[in-house]
Image (cartoon, rainbow, N blue to C red; front, top):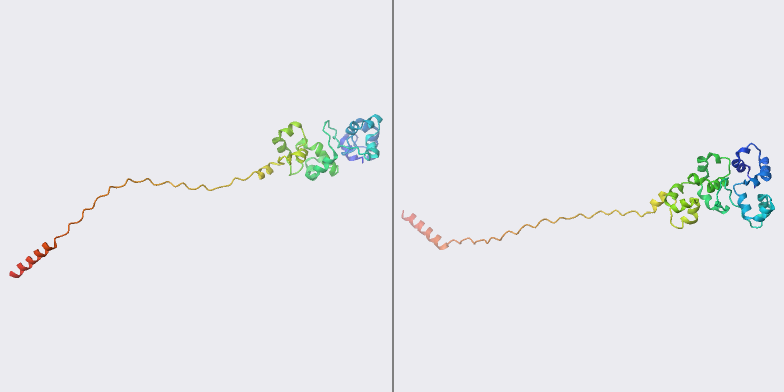
Length: 233
């Protein structure tokens, strides 16, 4: 459906018109100028993908609502007035929505205050990441682009790349996640080094000489003589 808040957001020069006048502006002038009626329909992409609608010079949004959707034709997300060749399928929104903190996004970008939640999520998917605004605490745009040169050089939406490819490839969403995933080094207490005492030179063995054994017979004879002399005296 036509979203006047989105249309007013994209066209501030006509934001004084009421909702009905804004819809008339799109149906009569806007689609011919390549303006989008909502965050979920890209006028230029629809015409580029459906040459019969382009050749018929009919309102592409009305064609989609009345005929194209039933025929299985696809509507892409708005480029929000930005020139880019990247095409965002509406299914991407379902993939990314759980990762986008709408309340935090509105705080970071007050200009989104009037848009509904899905429009805010679509804005982030197409435009918001280019400000390096994080969608939530679960994903860091700056970190992902800094550590993945291939994504940065290709100017791809980092969150979308992570959800489609990076997560399966083992890439990390935040620096904290990388730190947590790294195996912690086991702390081991080094075994004390025992220093052997220096070996002292062996002392030469001194042969002990046996003590001379006294001559018992000689001692006894001397004592006998002593006592005899004492008696005669």
